[in-house]
Length: 108
Length: 243
Image (cartoon, rainbow over all chains, first blue to last red; front, side, top):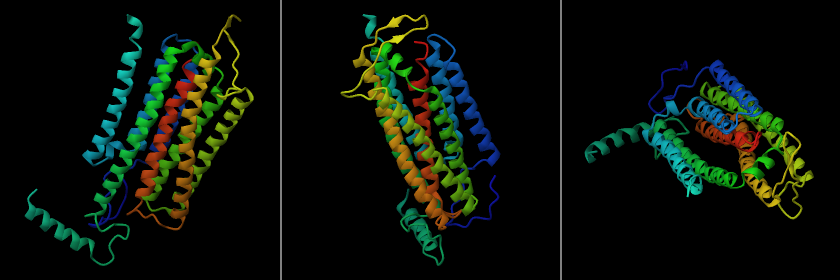
């Protein structure tokens, strides 16, 4: 992708490929459109689905940022990948176990 | 790995590292620049994971209290300005684009372009903070800042029916609002200082296509702060409009 000269041994080899400027602008525009969509959806009464739609769009936006702006796809180190995955894994434990408790307290 | 293999490969690496005119940014305790870069990236991601857990705790607290005091949290949320929140979301998204373009400029060795993108990023960050400041000012004027002067009036539904709101519960919403947006704003202030420093260093020519790890890692930080706002915006501003 990046037109670069032959890299010498002690120089950084660009293992992750940065994308073209147009690609980044396209992702930026997609993020702005998704923001407009989530604001628009907030003004429509979807009952219990308002939070679902809002958080779904937020997750799509966050995924776009993580995948294309933070270049996790190009991250070469398996150790780094393990750290990233474990971070989200423990966040999922925090949220799911807490919610499993508080959401079910009224079931008695 | 066998000891003999280790020592022989290390010997060749040391010989490479120590030769005249090697990459000046390469520290001698790393075998090569890629290893140095991977180590920095790993450290940065470890830090970002602690940030995710830190904000995750606050998100979790918010979700639990919202379940328990749903009515007051909805009433509090409806007092926030969706317009200002949406503009700030757009400002942060544009700043994330300038950050990623800065990384690309650094990779291609375009010093002036890199400095320009870094400066624009700082300006967008400051724009975010100014808009946030106006939002906070409004909260002070409406007495929605938790504390001795806090007051909250009952809300009215679409049919003009009065719905009583417990001010103590509304105060809890605004406590979480200020804790979460305030902590996010603190990260923005730190980010602006970080990118301002990088802009000066980049102008002085500290970064080359062979070494721009600080730009990349500061970029990771900025994107994470953006992602946190991407979740704060719907959770605080949007999801309770019709409750």
